[in-house]
Structure formats: structure tokens, C-alpha cells
Length: 164
Picture 1: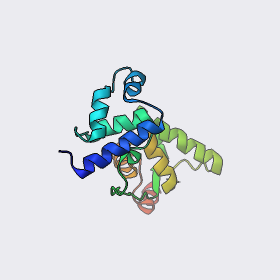
Picture 2 (picture 1 turned 60 degrees about the horizontal axis):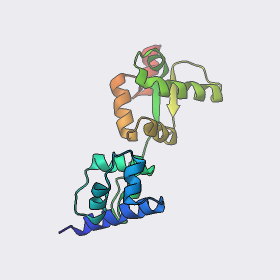
Picture 3 (picture 1 turned 60 degrees about the vertical axis):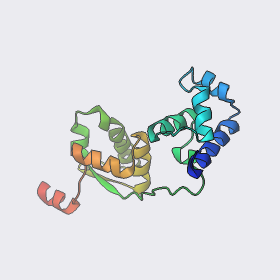
Picture 4 (picture 1 turned 135 degrees about the horizontal axis):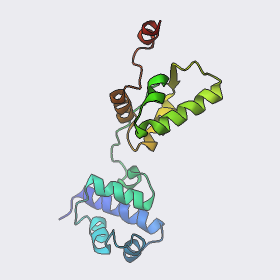
């Protein structure tokens, strides 16, 4: 017997599908068979558990945030983003393709600000959140990755003193 949460999740999945004007068979057809009607139906009834990964894939298929698939009242982890400071020299010289979107973004900010000191650039919390979306991660996940890549400045005063 499905739990109350499974039923609530299933109801939410059904609501989203119906809002998009799709039948169960329509989901299967639109997904070219990736999502079988019987599987979606069992998720919606709460008869079958859906993994987080599959829920994320279903959200992408429906083109909605994962949080929209969750039943009302489900606690969501809110992660406030903070400001970061990029080491522009390290960023622009980094060989990894994965920093290319951030490098382009940094260049655009420099152009908007008319700021070409070439050493460091602060990125606001809102910009960090937007960049995290591009990288399909959380702001803290992006900060962690940029730290691993060596393109973040943790202490600007120490960075400037080291440069002089």
C-alpha cells in the first residue's frame, strides 16, 4: 500500500502531466518510448517508488524545476549564495573547457564595468546562482568546483599582498 507521501507525489506528477495536456500514452509517444505509460501511471498512483535521478529526468522532460514535481509542503533545502571573487589570470589561463562559460561571463562583466585590471573580479550572489544553473549544480557545488580548479580567491587582501 502506497504511503501518503507517495500518493501526494503521484498526484503532483499527474497534475503536471495533465497541465501539459498529455495522457499517459502521450507521455510515452512524446518521449519516444523513454517514459513508458505503465511506469508513469505507477508513479502517479504511488505504486512505484521514483528515484531522485528519475524524478530529475522527468522534471527535465516536463520542462519544470524538480521542486514543482514535489508535493506541497515538502521541505526544500534553501541554499543562500554568497559573493565570490575570481582570480582572472587563473581563470583565463585555465585549460579546462568547463571554465569557458564563467570566463565568458567574467569578460562580459569586465566590459560592462569598464574594469580591466586583469587580476580579480567579484561575482554577486545572484550571478553565482545563475552560473550554478548553467553548470547544473548548486551555488556551493559551483564554488567547490571552482576552488578545486584554482580560480577562486578566498582572501583578497592576502592575494593582493602576494602580488605586490
